[in-house]
Image (cartoon, protein in one colour):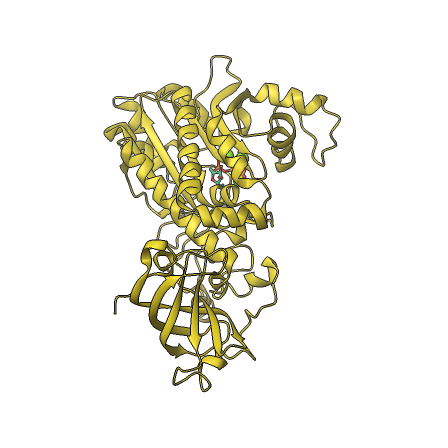
Length: 463
Ligand code: ATP
Ligand code: MG
Ligand code: MG
Ligand code: MG
């Protein structure tokens, strides 16, 4: 008998005299007419397949009537058109084999709805719920779209290192890497040298692949990196993780406008793909997580994004009657509340903020003619805030070097980076998109901990 996924079994064209499905029981109820209705899901889609198991089956009383949520089964039978509403097909089982039991006395995912907070304690079980299955499929779609988009545009996929000595962002948020068992050395009475712990050299987990990515862009033209990124964010917000995934395109001969266009096309492509390829999941988010999500995304992919210089954003924020917890004035960075006000109340959609003060942005961003601002671009979206941070890079050797001095960076540590400006320098630009923030925006999930399988936050790295 041919195995068929639940996703395919649910389609009208699946109707067949004999098929096999394999999955996990979501619910079971017995009808008076001598049937059991078993809802089975195998992760291939949001919906379940209804399996009708007649009392004639040999294990009906001994096993089928004992099935409960979480049990794994293999069912064989006929796929027929379903008389029930909301499903094209159902299976009339000739055999239901139980593969694994899930004791309803102890299985945590019973009928009762659990809060997302509670489900975080069961990160290993939550993919069995509707919400987390849907999140996983949308996240998978976005990852696929990322590769598709850049490959179609001729960007080369480059892997930048996870372990590095350079602090790209200069924000002091790096995790230190060690090859020493510090505890053991301390027990032995030391000496414990924290300074040189990656085989006698200091090293950290990467906060961004950008600087390494630039060296490939300035040789091969258009590249992107896509991998895990680490930041010692010692705060608890709904949009920061200590470990997250970032996509970073970098393109030679790009200016800020090219960069903004790329970012806009890219985001629109991601959300279009979610709408087209994850219809059932998106309908779920639309009805259960954020009302109107689907229409909101449809509008976003159709309209051009709003562009706004930082200076204009500041005067809007300073003149509104809205009350903020954090003061805002020219020269300070926007907080989440400011980003939300601009996107949700002022514009009502995504905003690309440009030309930030050089004092609040890293050394590699291109200094503008006014000497005060840099060619930066942050893309902000309603509900999430900053989703992309990027810039045109400083390609002039002398300006770059004086910016490094101002930032207190040791040029000797960055000799390899400086070489890209010494030899055949070109204007270039790029940005970083946080994968989880993109998934948050696409799904409407409020907390970033709920869009990555195993969130890493302060105090949370057990499994
Ligand atoms: P924020 O202002 O929200 O702290 P950032 O300006 O520090 O973000 P960038 O250095 O510009 O972030 O990184 C590029 C992108 O990576 C951000 O726009 C965001 O989408 C994502 N990102 C940054 N930090 C985190 C984090 N701790 N967890 C998840 N995503 C993040
Ligand atoms: Mg940050
Ligand atoms: Mg920021
Ligand atoms: Mg940023």
